[in-house]
Image (cartoon, rainbow, N blue to C red; front, side):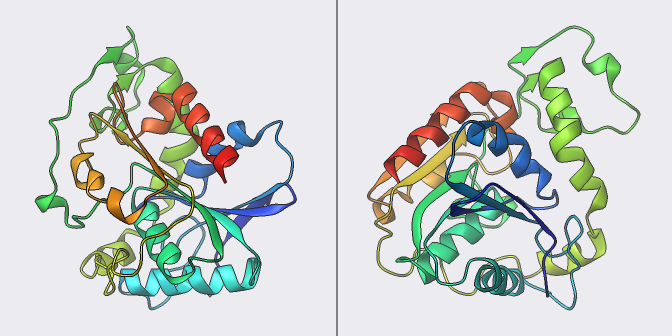
Length: 258
């Protein structure tokens, strides 16, 4: 299977994996502004199977998605060292890739990643709250637009970023295939079952993230001895569009450590 993808820039590969249901635009939307003005990075943004323009094929598990991503790495990067960024479910996959390729993955960054608890119902989660809002934003929503389901920041800027980076991927997903894969969402090999990952790491979570939380990620720290662990206030599962300045600074600092 060849995953649909886009590539920007030249230099050290940076593989960016989006979360469950959206597509590569979630990652280009938040990362390309960070890389603007930086040279020497080849950013690779695939659509995961059953998401965006990548077909599901006969994949029926996270193991199958991970295998497709591994084949994509072999095809696009080969044995070259690369940086790895994963958001939400993409962060879960990224940890598994770092486990299997610790010498090749020179740095690992995770944005609102699934933590040690994969199943939604078992996670430690805060209640959904809205902490920042602007007049007229809710009134401007189209019928059926689900921006407010996860939003902690309801501003015109956050809504514009959601419409540009997230909503198109949600609409493009193969929901039938995702329901099939969801039944085997947990990887058969625990990403933290091997030796600790020694590369520079970033784990950034939203204090008000009602999807994956932040407490189930804290216990990852012993496995990532070079991790910066940041929990941002006024940030939910769409942290990258709700706290863009802090997000930008943390990614840049991680790049400098790598």
